[in-house]
Length: 204
Image 1 (tube, rainbow, N blue to C red):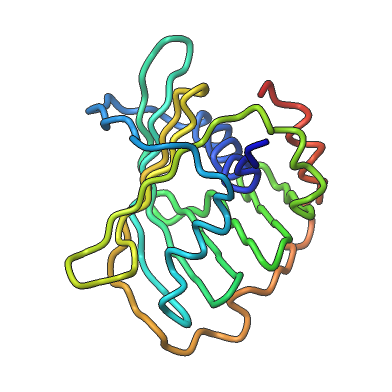
Image 2 (cartoon, one colour; image 1 turned 30 degrees about the horizontal axis):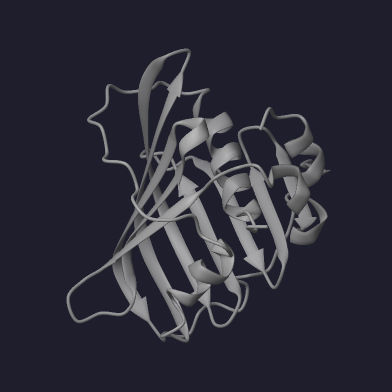
């Protein structure tokens, strides 16, 4: 059986639910992501950055989706952090600087903070793998000429008609990251919810 991308799916799903609160924009369609399904997307995701010991980059984040038959696009700014072998963090912000999400993968654990909902979702990856086994996800990466590090990552959920496009810029490799880059501290007053509970409440 093909293993499905539970962590990337969770991020796309929560990001979609957050952004639907905002104002969609008219879109120019992105072409579909071509290629086979990824057997182990998290391993693939980390492998794409494995030629570096660490990475820090700014990002432009675009989410294309459909809502009640209407095509929409949402744009965010972001910050991406990576440390070999298995730490990855993506922070998303509205263009005016308001935090939208903070997603952290760390050695099999997944943490997701939603300041707009005043909620945090946490869980071991293995706990909710079976919940989304039926979901198909494709991943496509691009590299600049002469570089082994992706400067663009595209994730597609065909059944959800949803595509996530991350474009990396101002990439800094193998520099020392702050000690708290991959620490998880829940802000005071934020409700902590098992990630599996969040997923069970969604129609997959």
